[in-house]
Image 1 (tube, helix red, strand yellow):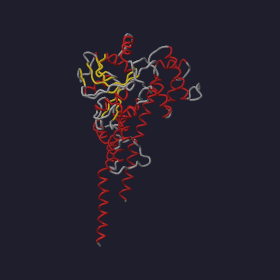
Image 2 (cartoon, one colour):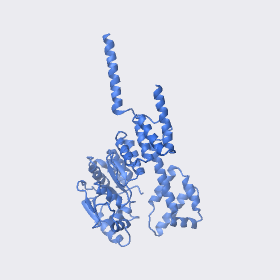
Image 3 (cartoon, helix red, strand yellow):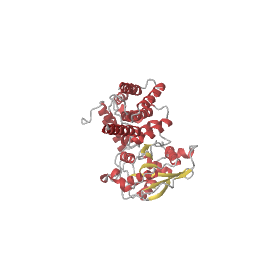
Image 4 (cartoon, chains in turn red, blue):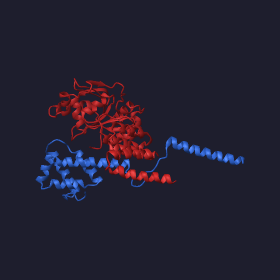
Length: 288
Length: 131
């Protein structure tokens, strides 16, 4: 993934030209699949009217899009307040990793979801706006842009974005797919601790919580507990929960999680190692 | 006697405050040496996904044919990727991510450039002595 993203400025014109240029020769396989066989559980259309709109200032689509998803997750923040966290003037853009870090600084978890339209629309159907990156230009002449997916219509094959200076930017799903594919299908859902995106794996979720815990150890308990409930068999989430409990001084509880895990997976080495160490800590405290 | 009572009273108060603090917040324990931490597990996940990206790239038919055409043993390259450290893995995975996916003269040249950088790092070739 390329690192610097300058926002598209004359995007409307550019998009028009590129659409004409590209629709002739580039396929949109995911849109085609969605049209041929829509997922049975997915609503036909959805629009998240509650998601606020922050018109982009100059090149600052990063702060605007980030403020959009953060406010939708009940964080009161303006794009201006985020500029110092995510905007790099020399690049006229924002780094993806910094977008994720800024969401965490606002006490929200940033979940990278799978790069499929199914995943994106599935989150929107659950009233979760999805932060996306697009390349509105060409691979060799990129025009990077951040936007937020807030709606879709399967019958009309359209997607609705909060994008740039347009509140409801409705565009053909195939065009969205191509611009999104050229930015590596990057899609992010921003949620409070304890909520889980539908489309992520246990490992994806672990990564999001671990990064969050680094900044907000106290707030991450709910996230670990929710993960354990959703994926009771996940070794890595059990490890995260156990480590959290240990750090919080709940040593017995921490050991119990590992014991349960080892009953299912007796040869899981990290759990064996930690349980041995925790037992040492417990026996030392009994001596005292 | 009176001052004794007062002293033991304030001692109790201190203990009470301490206990209450522990109950409300819990003491933050440092992980003992040798404990597998959450941050370590996070790095392991990162490394294995980068390794997958690189081996996936080397498994592509178009890449394999370009490599064999230049006399590079693909299995050998794969084996060396398996032995790379975290910094090298991150460098390579980032380079592969930046590759254009389409075809074309310029893109083929870029492919080759990256392949050879990759193999330099993996110790198969030695075209870029700086790496």
